[in-house]
Length: 210
Image (cartoon, rainbow, N blue to C red; front, side, top):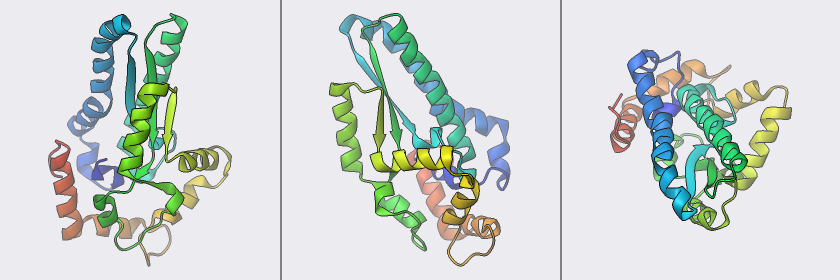
């Protein structure tokens, strides 16, 4: 998970650069589609299975994750449609979409060192997530949600809670900030420690360190 998903779109000019946006789509969406296209003929012969890692952010909007949410919404739109087409053509290939939520790594702990707004039920471990993904290759569900309770609750909040936007903004604003906390979010992103962490995570994922 990239730290640029924690950056408000309108606050950082580089996020609005068409080349940067295209890069995000190529890595987070187009590469998966191309992989599926090339793999399908081989999987048809072996009655194989595909697992594509999406996110609960592909079902919910988050203002500090605009590009991330957009690519994951696109992923869900394409792969659920492909899943349906495979069923329609009675293909031997099955497909699972992984709707993954917050995986609590040491990097995430650093990001939220000043304030952890997430309850325990919203956080998942790398080990349990990996185990669930491996089990999906055996059971072949249409969707693998992890953490499961978080997925169920977040979907319910989005579809049925009238003030979802306002609630999420208040939940994720920096500790001690007033109003929506937007100004403090920008100041936090511009701090030297946060900038260094963003650069480190960007390089780890193959992106330039913005």
